[in-house]
Image (cartoon, helix red, strand yellow):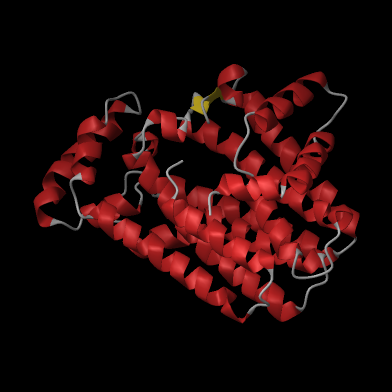
Length: 324
């Protein structure tokens, strides 16, 4: 399934969530409103709200309830991107100026904090402490994941396990609870919400691996930012970890890593990217992403055979093969 087909099918519900997102970030403070709207209008795939909506289809589907989960999860994601852009000194995201680039780092950080707070405030609309606790824990884990990424910048000795633990916190957990909390908000059976969590976790792991592959293999037009952004900031991702295991590539890759680190981000990384593209690291990372997608789909087998199940499988295939 192409994601655009799912969007077309769910257009009415997605539009409803989009309007609720706009309403949730409204404020009397002019600058906060401007920066938050700028971030919202930059767009995005809205993958997390889609997972919430599909998860809710396994229970009593009610948008007026489910919005209290779908909106916070997208807000948490948005807030994390603002903070990421500060850490990365990113000028653009999705082809648009970042908040830090259009304003400054201080404005960006407070915008992110404001959106995080709004996310937790919207979630109180359901009056379910378990949902609030799950969202709060996700923000906590994401913060730890970001700190671990910074701690391991330019560390060529980090392991595959280090990487997997990091992306679990940074990306997979939020997608996992998107699937889970959608079902919980719709009063689905616990065993259903638990399986949806597992599905989302595996899809989330594949999502981040594919994202890291795109940073090395994609074009600026495809990914909305210059390729090689990860390594410029020192983030060593899974294709690089695999490539560093190849005896013939260790020396030239280490030389490139030292050169990039000494340049402090302002440098051409095309030689580094060329080395990675010519390695086995790309293929190995793709195989790992595919294994996670296979595990995700396998988890769904025991769920009721409703349209939402087919749509989740379609989204999983999209994520496994995405080029943007």
